[in-house]
Amino acid sequence: MTVDAVTTTGASKNAADEAGVRAQERGLALTGPDGLLGQLTQTVLETALEAEMTEHLGHAKHADQPGREGTNVRNDSRAKTVVSDAAGAVEVAVP
Image (cartoon, rainbow, N blue to C red):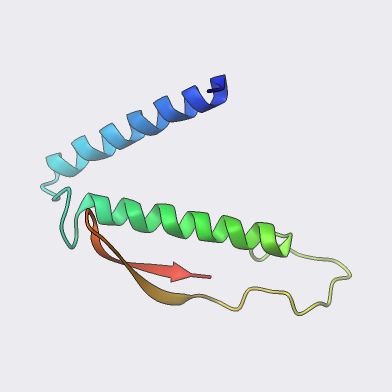
């Protein structure tokens, strides 16, 4: 494991711990239909899908591409439902 991987893992754990504490303070359930786990799952999946699309197209969303008139662009997103045992049904915007 690299130093960056260890740092990222530690930072991710701290962020997750903090999110859990804040959710409990606000009375938000950790699991269930509107729980924190479902919200985090949705955020992680949508972020990963956007990054994958950016890599595939070779440019960021809404980025100016001078001299580029191609049709390889983003055409909005569509809703998909992902079902997991831990988070339940999570609606994700797929680019």
